[in-house]
Image 1 (cartoon, rainbow, N blue to C red):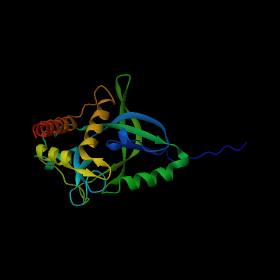
Image 2 (image 1 turned 180 degrees about the horizontal axis):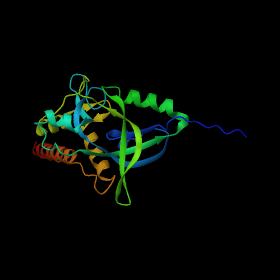
Image 3 (image 1 turned 180 degrees about the vertical axis):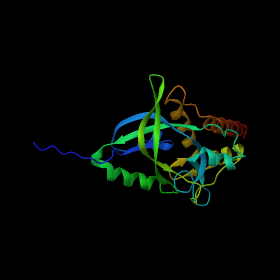
Image 4 (image 1 turned 90 degrees about the horizontal axis):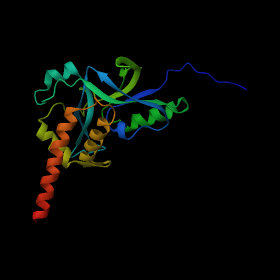
Length: 211
């Protein structure tokens, strides 16, 4: 019997957006964890999934905490610098296939970076995964829109629709999924946007019933 070994680095990808509720294929292990020194914000325009080129929606991206502080005057939660998500380990036999899948899925302005993922074990913080891959919409890409007033942002998310569906459904699914990751995984930015969009849902329902 021949045993094949490999020294190839494990392909671990960190999902902090739709990958949390729609994981990549060929996952052999997954673990909730978080990033330090970043914020997760709806600061990326979506032309191809949750909006259109004419009316782009908004999806989340990661921004370095210090960079966000420099231009986040519109954001009421500048100090949330722990980003919870899921670290997915991919079956080594499908590295290339999954990489191509993710590159296509995140093609609208995202860049692949390597980051350490943290977790908690026996009450102590540990590095859960070293140098995991993560798709980041950096502030120098054409789809990055930055900080917007929270009510304006919520309204854009609420009304936008793209090939992958309604933008608000992306927000709702992400908010619910993040809350389930760990007892401490609350995200105030997601919560504030969800509250505003739910209120717009309620207003639309009342208006519809009144007609």
